Image (cartoon, rainbow, N blue to C red):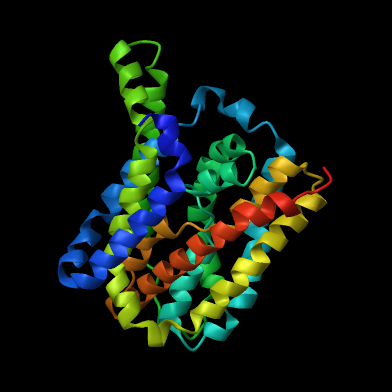
Length: 320
């Protein structure tokens, strides 16, 4: 199998990983819980592999599409937060679920959204180049969103420490290493070979992240589903309304079909894999249910993407 074949078949690979993880997590829940220790390292490896695909030396040119970037940022950090605020008001009596839902719905995806954007006939290169900006802004704005959207009487306490740790381990370290190895390509042959070898890594790394995330949490999701059910309509509502919001923003900014589809995919796809460590760092009395709410969104979203990759190319924009 060559790399192109692997990339062309990555969606079946991801769903197979989810299936294996769910089966293992349900049949051997005690052993599967040990996978939670691997969540952060696995995501860090994935982030390095993803960042290594970004042409940092040409990043200014990649981000020169100011209209696209403006639409992307307005959609993800203005319109979508307003939508999330409206959808989650019914969860005020469920603080743990509310915290998990806000963590995941307020953070745009920066990993497999690139894959689904490509399959859905969006501009995956623009999407990939925008991921560092999306990641930095969501970590900066997420604490503010949580302060504004959590019930004022809520006992949920969001500590700054986990956000700083996630920023350093999941973003700064992989990003710096990726920039350094990208810059060294023309200076050393071994660096060039290293980077070439890592072009194989994103697909298996994503599969590994899905396995450790789903495998470590699925048993609790099933066990606690009677308490999780209030969040399911919220996720279904987001699945239906987020693409509409992204399309409307794209229309306002006058985007052509390909970049508009990228904005729609970004608006609709959330950063569940990266925010799970934040949910697991919440106070002990709510972390289990909050993490389960994050995983529930992942499962709903993966099913949604199967619809999106067919519906979005046909809908945005047919006549362009």
